[in-house]
Amino acid sequence: MALVDLHLHTTASDGALGPEELVRRCAEAGVRVMAVTDHDSTESVRAAMAAAAPLGITVIPGTELNTDVADGEVHILGYFVDLDSVRFQEALLALRDSRVGRAKAMIAKLEALGMPITFERVRSLAGDGAIGRPHIAQALVEAGHVASMAEAFDRLLGRNGPAYAEGMRLSPGEAVRLIREAGGFPVLAHPSYVRNPEETVAALAPQGLAGVEVFYRDYSAQERERFAALARRYGLLLTGGSDFHGTGNWPEDGPGTVEVPWTVAEALFAAAGRPVPTR
Image (cartoon, rainbow, N blue to C red):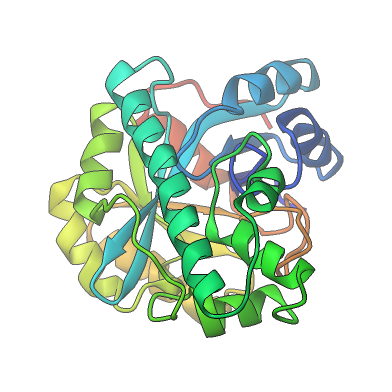
């Protein structure tokens, strides 16, 4: 089990667990340093911090911003963001509001395709969190229109799918700058999902990219070394985490199941000028 997990989701976005339950699961797994990185939200961070403190767990305030490029999406993680930054919170709120309009546009397209679902059900699945395509996919599975979440994305909700709709567009560079302006450290999430990670890192490093997510679920030793070498080439931090959601909709293990070296936490805290937690 890993002592470090820097990629975790709660009900504030598309995770199944509230912040307190997520912290409990991390504690059971032996995690000592964790980051709550909900999509376009920091709403669960303070509750996670409060729950973690008595357990001796350090919570890094974070988020994950979805950004658009010509051939897909690039996700940017932000660590040590200032939770009290008015500009940053306004930007996150605008992104979350855009998700509502996007969801309604997708639902309208699905209706036209003969696959009706209701916005009310999608909103219910999202709870208090930011609405995302996984909630629409889940509603499609429930309605019997598709057999799985993967099928929903492959056939309908993917970038080139017939039910896809654009939301508020944020470029990777804009996400990097937004996180930097909030005092945070922007990191390229799961680079294997990016069409050309080398080109992406080369473009974003001069704009303030701080790191690359090197340790991730299902990465082979060769992939880890590839992305570690890429990060070192530009003098960037190495990070990692489980990307745990807990919904059961994707193949994943629990929090703390990706081996992230303790040196990753040490380097991140040192870069932030924060004392490194004890193991």
